[in-house]
Length: 339
Image (cartoon, rainbow, N blue to C red):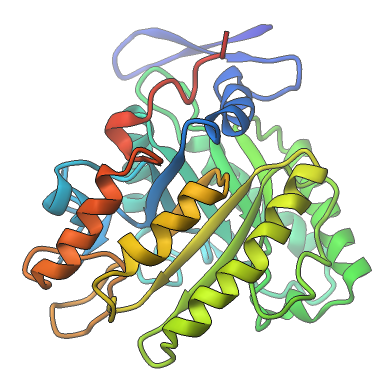
């Protein structure tokens, strides 16, 4: 084990971040190992931008729509990093990177797991441009440190396959090569606080074909927007692909996370009758709901908020009180070495 000593000019304190034999920080390595063992305890419940924005609010201290409903916070917080590579101040969801950085650090300090997606722009085959992109990404990730210089462990999904992005149109071999090249660049940039994952939006049974062997965690995204709601199809789709995806992850010594939700929650029994049986049957590392954003009239929400129907809130509370779900208050020791 190697200890990095960092001198903090602001408060005159020496601080350190331990490096494991893998080359990652010990907290990052512990998180990776614990993701497997924690699936025996239950599934961590989180949300994209869960503590950064919600219905009718943005970037308010100690606020989340989760907390407004159940007086608890997400165990997992997700963020999109698209735009960081180009030096933009805001990401593709119009949220400042300064907010994202501060929010992620604060969530880590409270024990949450941090998930970040990088939906990268086309570098048009220019390797130097790609290197510059990855350098900017690396600098941002490495800068995520608390006041003691402890880096925030990140689950990073590079090039999440969505069927629409330029890299989703690459051949399987070219996609894997791009992934491997980017991993090498992150290593060259001495990024030590990342677990590199593979993420894919579910579209049909031919999924996970692009899975790169270097990936250490898998995420499947399956969201229904309010314009395309089909609850029967949603249930059948989850029942079809989840067992296959979990089996695939286990065969590759990985864990599986699920990003999901039905926008506007048209069925008040969604959480209790559709999701809870899944959590009881399948071992998932986490379930992360889509983001809540906009005003009260927009309908852009995947979890309830105050005033959005008592039936939906009661359904969410059943999920919260289920023994198989882990919200922040029950998430203990994610970054500590398991004995």
